[in-house]
Amino acid sequence: MNETERVAIDEAVSANALDAIVYDLDGTLVRLAVDWGAVASDVDRVLRNQGVDPPEGLWTMLEFADSNGYREVVEATIAEHEREGARRSERLALAAALAEEIEQERGERGDDDERSERSEIPIGICSLNCESACRLALETHELADRVGSVVGRDSVSTYKPDPEPLLATIEALGATPERTLFVGDSERDERTAARAGSRFAYVSELRSDGGE
Image (cartoon, rainbow, N blue to C red; front, side, top):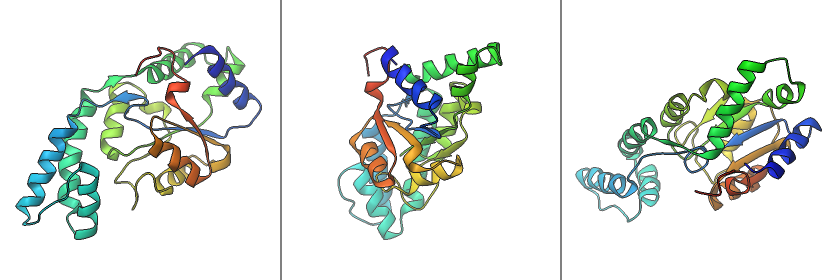
């Protein structure tokens, strides 16, 4: 994240303006090594094996499955790809910054009150990926110990842009929506934050490498 944005978040925390920070996962902290075209083909095949003619598009098929009693088999198919993709995922700049802060906290605990204050801010994950894949990605990149709540596509009854997953994440962190910053990479994430009543920032506004 660039220095200006980093300072802005630090100042918000120091001023007690934030109770929690929630991150999207794929495209925000990591990039899952998933061929989504292959996932869609597998889901299409699974649904056709159930004797139905599925609609086009992965998430459209998921919604179709949810409404027609095929959610479990479709969810299992998508999740298998996501978990493997999590194991081989790429750490992005924001996750690298978090990992660096974790190492600094371990090495300098108690030596820097400002860093300590910021590191105490609860962190959560609210993702459209399945919860188990989220946890695998966090473990892969040594971020799991810093994250207090993980809510994935299958953790609650709805998924983004419905506000329920984000609200569940915030509640688990003991925070309130209006004092929580949600960081994501998509319009879906922005709509989710708006519906939940939380603050929002695009990861592109925060990361330091200027890349994807």
